[in-house]
Image (cartoon, rainbow, N blue to C red):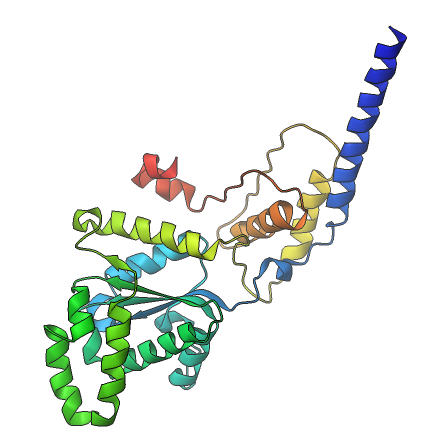
Amino acid sequence: MQKEKRKQSKDEENDSSSRKRRKADLTAMIEPDSSRSRPQVAYDVFLSFRGEDTRKTFTDHLHTALVQAGIHTFQDDDELPRGEEISDHLLKAIRESKISTVVFSKGYASSRWCLNELVEILKCRKRKTGQIALPIFYDIDPSDVRKQTGSFAEAFVKHEERSKEKVKEWRETLEEAGNLSGWNLKDMANGHEAKFIQEIIKDVLTKLDPKYLHVPKHLVGIDPLAHNIFHFLSTATDDVRIVGIHGMPGIGKTTIAKVVFNQLCYDCGYGFEGSSFLLNVKESESKDMVLLQ
């Protein structure tokens, strides 16, 4: 009986010590720095696309899905500062992205701008810095990209007249891109765009193996609020905790949640078996409860 009591007392001491260690870990984070929630790479994904073809349709839907999945995505129409030279910023964005996703459409090859982007994307891929080029064949066959046939052939008739010195490089780049492993709408999800985009998101997430959710730079007033949440969580207990963050729209509730999620799941060193961050729950639930689940 005495041995059992000593064993029980020792177990209780171990549990108490474990709780104190967890409290110390969280207390050490009481002064959270939201900047730690940012990866060093500027962007997870760079989107290359022909605006006239897909900006307001497929690419817009893809961009929205990427952002909702917590993937920091560069799209030229909403990322570039006004009044500055676009080419320099595009080159910088491509070089500082983990993945360059190229949406090939029928009009892609007609844009010299797109072709020059593609040249830089494949140059980055060859530099062995871990960058990935992911082609998406939206409404065009990969063979048309490789061989410059169909609408691509028509585009190159004009290029031969106006940009003859660049044609050879563009053709070689398209041939290389057309041979890369990617996604073809005609072959996937029976042409169903929404399902097609879901599969692309899964693939991108797998390639990124993301941990940190993206948090914008130069946040104001977020750290003190995150401090309050960590203070609450630092209370030593094994109970399940539910924390509610409420307030007016636009005050930074989601950003605070991301900061706390990043630091609790990844900076504390607990090594959780699983963690999830669900964005736009109300909107997702109204559209597709199965997808939300």
